[in-house]
Image 1 (spheres, rainbow, N blue to C red):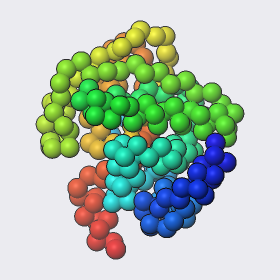
Image 2 (cartoon, helix red, strand yellow):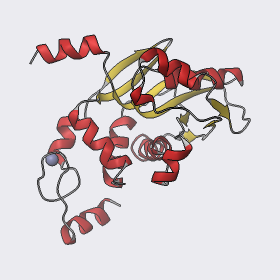
Image 3 (cartoon, rainbow, N blue to C red):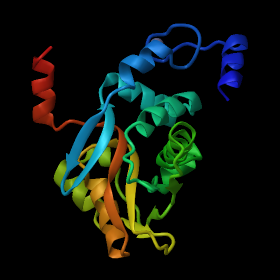
Length: 220
Ligand SMILES: [Zn+2]
């Protein structure tokens, strides 16, 4: 796979989406700089791990992955998430996409990330992680990005349903970005009602609460 990518980059060179260097959709230097992080993220009663803050660089990477279907960027994101997967994690459950988003994109970003993370863990750590696509939206919800924290929670109340009954003791959720945590909390509620424990969540990026964003900005 890497050889094929190297070959394609040689005959059809592209530019790094972050630094514009010629060679590949994301260069090794930018990977090392922006995709090598690790942070503990706490939302409500759930804890998880993310690679980075949802800053301007992370926004570009996620946009290129989700809207421009840059699979190589998705793979680099998955590689970085794979390094955060705890030893106790055996099952990943991706956060589903809204039907309209799936219709526009043709794929579910979190599911693609989950499958790539599983593949990376198998390849580099020799462990098998099952991906169970258990959740779907059972009603229309508004776009979360336009809502405040309180409205986000109301918007998602009872939004998910279980697609299939499985015997799973404990799972980890996975999504591309965690913001207020309303989505992972609702996903957990749906799974717990079905008797499935949720140990935590994995995410590529986290959006910092507004007060922390200001503090972070002042420190530069
Ligand atoms: Zn670069």
